[in-house]
Image (cartoon, rainbow, N blue to C red; front, top):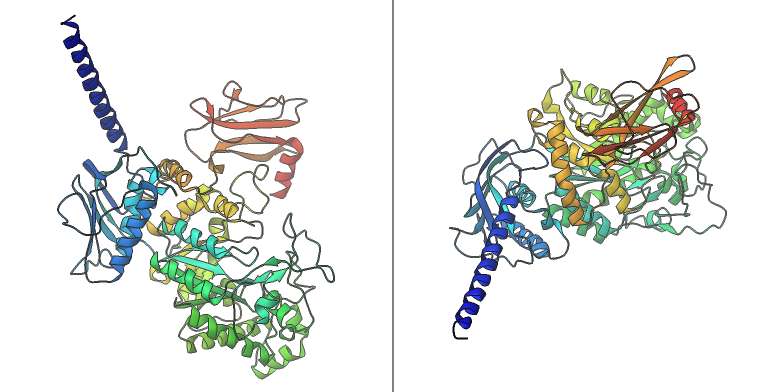
Length: 640
C-alpha cells in the first residue's frame, strides 16, 4: 500500500504537466494562427512583413508624443474602441519602451506622407505610428485595427481571443484627398443614430467625407430657424411602401406621418462626431430643381405658385412644378436665409447646391423668368440655369464657402470658381477640368451604390447595374487630363429603394470597400484577385461588427445574346475567381453533382423552359441559385 500513494502523486503530477503542456501548445498554435496574412483595405502604399507578433494585454500602454491636443482625443477614442471588444482597460500613461502602442507627430514634416499619411511599425515589443498630422495617426490606427483579429470589431466583449498583431512595416498615404460617400436622407429619413453609425463604418475604410443629401422632392431634413415651415411641412409626407415610383398620389386630408429632420443641435452633434473621426460633412441643398419639399412649404417660390404636397415617391416634374422660379426675387431672399444658416452650421469649405435634372418647361412659359432672361440678355433657359448657379456662387462666396454642383451646372456656362461633381459619366468632369475647374469624379455606372449589384432576379428591386468588379475597375483620372484638377471621387447611395440602415449597408458593402481602394491606394497596387481575397477576410470583421453586407459577387453571372433570329445562347461566368458553375435544365436544383459549366455557350434543350445555375467552391455552394426562364432571357436581350 505504501508504494501506491507515490505512484498516485506522480500520475497526478504527470496529468498536470500534460495539461499545462497542452495549454501551451494550444496557445502557441492559436498565436501562430493569428500570424495572419496581412489583408488591409484599402491597400497601403508599401507593406513589409516582419517576424513575430505583438500582443495587446492588460499591461499594454498607449502613449502619445506631440503637442497637438487632438492626439489625446485620438488616444481616448482608440482605448475606448478596444475596450468594447477586448475588455482590456489599456493604460494611457507609462514608458514607451515595451508592450506599448506609441503614436507621435513628426517634428519635421515628411512631404511623402502629406496630411493623411502615416508610418506604422509593429515589432514584438512595440507598435509605433508616426505622421505629420493627427489625421495620419487616426488612419494608422484604423490599419492597426485591421491587423488585429476580426473579433476586435465586436460590439460586446469577446473572451478567449489572443489579441495579436503581426510584425510589419507600413508606409501609407492616400492617392486622392476627396474620398466620399453620399447618403441620401431625403428620400428616406435616417435617424441621427443611424448617421453616427454610418460614419464609423466609412471611417473604418479611410473615407474622409460624408455627403448628406438633405433636401429633395421627398423631404426637407435640416432645421432652418428663420424658415420654420421647411420642417413643419417640408419634412413630412404621406407614408407609402412598395416599389418607388409606383405610389399613388397623396389623398386629400391624408395624414403626413412619414419623415423627420435634424435639428441644428442634432447636426452639430453629427458634425462633431464626424470630425473626431476625420470625416467632413458636405451638406447638399438641392436647387433649383428637386425642390418640391421647399415649394410645398412656401408655394410662392415656384413658377405656378400652386400648393403641392411633398412627393411620396413619383417622378412628376412635368405635372408638379418642383423647380424654383428664377425670375422671382423672393426665391433668392429665401435661399439667402437658408444658406446663411447652413454656412454657419457646417464648417466644411464646400456647400453642394445640386443643380441637376432641372425640368425647364415651366421657365419657358413663366412671365417672371422670361423677364429675367430679357433683363440679363440670356438666350435660352440653359443660360437661365447658368445665371442661377452663378448667382448662387456669389451668395456662397460671400459666406466664405465654395460651390460644388452636379455636372448639369456646366449647361449654359460654368460659374467662375465652381467645382463639378461628374455623375452622368466622365465627360462633364473632363470638360470642367479642361476649363481648369476642380472635379469630383462619381460616374453613376461605377459609383452609384443604389444600382443592382447582382442578378435582378434575386436582388431587392432597384434599377441599372454596377457590380463589385465594375466599381473596382473605376479609374477617376481620364487620359489627357491633368490629375491636379481631379480632387477624387465618391460612392453615392440614393435611397429611393433603401428605407433602412440595414439595407443601406447591404447596398454599400462591399462595393464601398472596392471604391475605397480606388480612391486611396496607388493605381499600381490595385489587383482584383488580391482584393477579393482581402474582402473575404473582411466579411468576418463585418460579421463581428454586426454590419450587413452583400455576397452578390459570389452569384453566377448570366449573359445572353441572339445567335440566329429567334435563337439565343447563354454564357455563364463569375465575378469572384476560382468558382465552379453548375447548371440544370430539368427543373432540379443544381449542385456539385450537376452539369459543370465548361465555358461554352449554352442552348436550351428541346422542351426545357428554365435554366438553373449555382456557383460552388471546393464542392460546396457559395453563391445563390438563379432560376431564369426562356422568356426572361429573351426580355433581357430586348432590354439591351
